[in-house]
Image 1 (cartoon, rainbow, N blue to C red):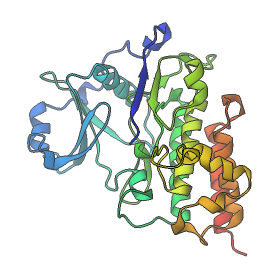
Image 2: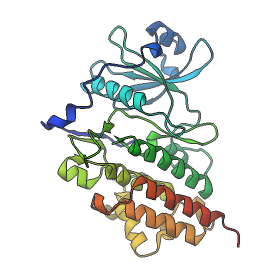
Image 3: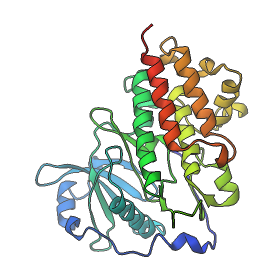
Length: 319
C-alpha cells in the first residue's frame, strides 16, 4: 500500500464539505456491540490498516459479518475523514460501492461499520500473495465494475480522491466494491469544474495536474484509475523503488511500451498467450488516455467504462 501524502494549504473552499451533522442516527451502534463483535478488538480479527486507523472483521449478534474501521484517537485527520465517509454514504448507494451499515462515536471512539467483503482487495489478487491467478476476462469484469462505481460517484457530484487497487474490494462473487471515502470531496455546484484543496492521496496514483495546481477534478480520479489499469495488466506495484530507475513508476514504464505498441512485452506472465491482441490494444489505449498529462485530454469515467466493455467484447468475440 502506498504512503499517504498530505500538504497543508489555507484553501477556504476545502472546508465546505465538513459543515454538516453526522446522519443516520438510526444506524448508530453502541460501542459494547462492536466490542462484542470483535472480542474487544482482538488483533486476531485485524484485517488491515490505513490512514484512518485499523480495520477489523466482526460478527454482529444477528450473524451479520461486518468490517469495522476504527479511527486512531491521536489522528488529526480522523474526525475529518470520519465525517467525510458519513457524508458520502448519506449521498451515495450503489452495487459497486461498499455498503455502509452504521457508525459509533461513543467514548472518544470513531468507528465506521460496513458489510464485510469476503475476498479482500484487488491488489492482493494481482500480486504479492499466493492467491490464484485471475483470468483476463475476470480482470476486465472487475475494472468495468469499478468504473461503474466511479462513474456513479462522478454523476452524483463526488470525487473519490484515493482511487487505487487496495480501495477496490472483491465480494464472494468477485464483484468489485469501491471503498474508503475518507478523502472524498463533493463538488460545490453544477457550474464548478474543480475543488481547490490541499493535496491528499497515495504516492504512485496522484494526478500530476492536481499535484501542480491543487485543483481537484473528476479527471483526477480518472488518472488514478489509469494507474490501476496498469497494475491489472502488469501485476506489479504502482511505485517500486527497488526496480531500475526507468521502471520505478508503473505509468512511465507501461506507457513507454504502450506508445511503441508493445504492451504485450510487459504483461503479467500469467496472461501471456491468453489475451486477444485487439482486446489488449483497446485496454492499453484506454489506460493511455486516462494517464494524459492534462485532465482536459482525459476521458470521462463514462467513456472509460464504454471502452473497457468494448475490450471485454473483443476478448470474448468468437471467430
